[in-house]
Length: 284
Image 1 (cartoon, rainbow, N blue to C red):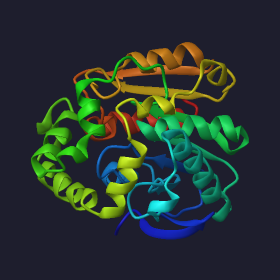
Image 2 (image 1 turned 180 degrees about the vertical axis):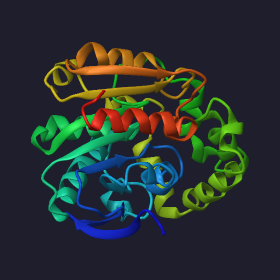
Image 3 (image 1 turned 45 degrees about the vertical axis):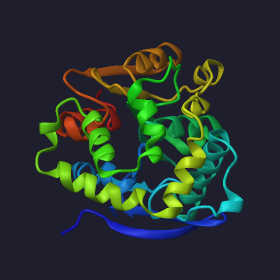
Image 4 (image 1 turned 180 degrees about the horizontal axis):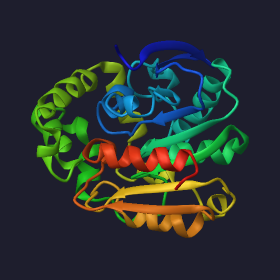
């Protein structure tokens, strides 16, 4: 029996596609990252079963990715800042459409930055936060891996996507036989014209990710409990980002996994679930 269904609901001016585990427990919203071909299924399909026994898990395709409606050529947000604002509104509209007052948020990479901006905008809708390899912190110069990611469509090839997928993890053997499947599924996504249009709009320059940064003056006003999780060998968002967050988020704690890259939820799925479940129950 599948642990979730795929649903669609109107959110503002467009329709959002999301995964829903069902159930009546507290709601956990999973927000995926922003690499080429990212969506809720590729980030969370294997993670949802570890939470769905006790929680209702919602994992949307964030605006600009996946099966959620994409803006037309004339309606593209003009900057990453505008994309972030549209996504904050999308997720709040999604909560309203599903009659969800408050939720736990788990955000990976760009989804982590989005979780912070949601909390800054509507703190009453957020119970607590898990930020995993989160964007939105103080950024040094973009790493070569980030530059290759944001400029992916200069060479949108299967070989290029396979390299990126390998770089997301510390040890590609951790992906097992799923590496080719991940690449195949993501390649089908990135070749969709609307996905390409959205991606190129949001990552117009190599410095576009910096527009997701949450200022320190905003971070210190987020008093929610926050669990920061990072892979020590993450080359897309280096672990000093989580350390930086811990210095500005007043009620936060950090866990760094060794021999782990950007996809903690995949490389260290079971210990990650152990941490998340302990955190959500208040035992951690």
